Image (cartoon, rainbow, N blue to C red; front, side):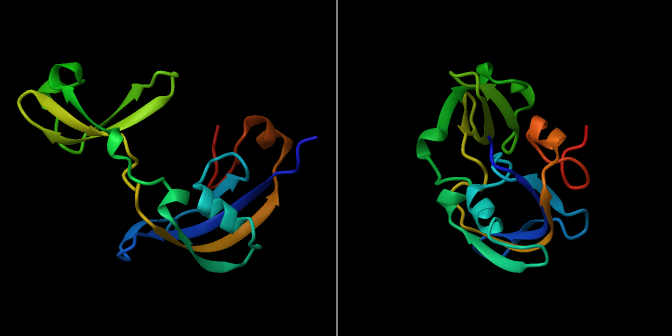
Length: 160
């Protein structure tokens, strides 16, 4: 029998190592996720699992426990004619590709010249230590429907 899973709802403000705000939920609904379903970064999920409703904490997450270390092997050169929208390609553009195991890969254009584009397959926050200022607003058992779907439903979670 699978262990019971909880749905944890929380407000957060995410900052980088320089203290710059990257994202926040403070002006909207709390974010909700179901434990053990890889919906949030591992370092944050481990820390939230130890908290109770009403707790407020600053949680520091090392790069390896967030979006991973920056991998220079994920920076590649691709002939421009092999890319979508070659005529309007710009630094900062993002697009998806399918990997060798049918996984979805995301790339950002980080450089362009006449013949090639330089693409980065790292997450934009790879290599970054992150700080989450969190307030746990609710913790409850996942419903049977949520368990069968593999994610939280309702405000702050997935809506069908």
